[in-house]
Length: 462
Image 1 (cartoon, helix red, strand yellow):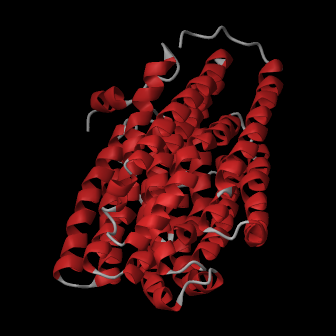
Image 2 (image 1 turned 180 degrees about the horizontal axis):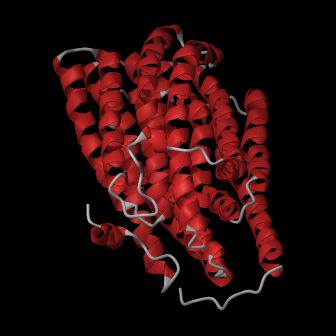
Image 3 (image 1 turned 30 degrees about the vertical axis):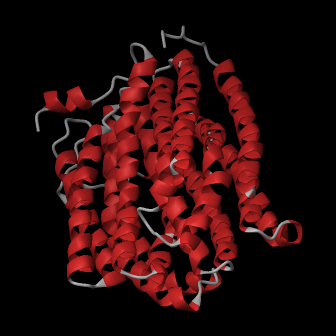
């Protein structure tokens, strides 16, 4: 691929108005997130058409388990994004090349570690979640196969982190588009034609994820310097200073995601107590929550990349504008999506199941959780802003307390207050409000502390 075409795809984060550039950067990320979530959604939908409610629950309720094992390494990918973006802002090309080589090594190691952990811990975690007897064997089967694709998934996620740092979000989207189509076709073939059920959709996901990883590696190897990925493994070197920087930013972000997932596992365990219909309904509704949440995640990535580059180049006024613009886009676009899905709730859930009981539980989750989801932008965008400035521990501690500790306390006490399905889910909007206020305030304090010690550059037009 020519250097000219690659440069054309990249967004210049350091010059010109920010509103259009941030939106241009984020739209492919939103589409990529939707496509990535479609892997599981397609699995659930196909299983729903060709199998049982128990199979839907087995495939659809594994999100918290996957997240708890994957999030630490995805946090390190966030750290890699922030570090490379800052080096690019400083025009330190040697450091960028070192970081790319370091990221390549991390992606492979993390993938194989996750594969081992996922296969080994699937059953114990499912048992700890009190998975129903009619679901647990199928869920274990799906997870054990799914985690075989972890080396591919980590390769894609770390590769896309490199591309985000230079402002290219289009290629990761194209890679996901191809692999999503592949997953859809293989799901239909393995489950619908061959009748392989849960194992069929799991293997379809693994194969499609491999296609995804191969595409991202192919194009990274053809990116212009300094982000070119060498395919000669003997040329890879682990830079300890750069690795430490990635860990310093990434581990708190990853631990936050892990603890967040642990709290969701406890909530999922409470949901499991309502039976298979509640599990299936919650899983179907959760699919749309994740779809909408990718809007927030996209602007989190934009916050890190734009803030990192501008912070590295000393454009502190533009950093402040990035926080304001990303927060605005995240709240408005996520909120609009939340309301649209809730408004057409019956139509969206009918794609997964026609069961009235499953529909009931899904709609309760829509009206209790989904319609308020945009509130999470307040702490997610603020936390990403602090990470780009090198402060990762503060948002982790505040978010862990606000969205994890409080939720765990609620799960243990809610039945004495309101033992309904609606009562259980109320903790989501409550904790979004509390956590958002705390993290946004901390971001303003960190911003004053960092920029107050430096000469502030004139902000450019937004």
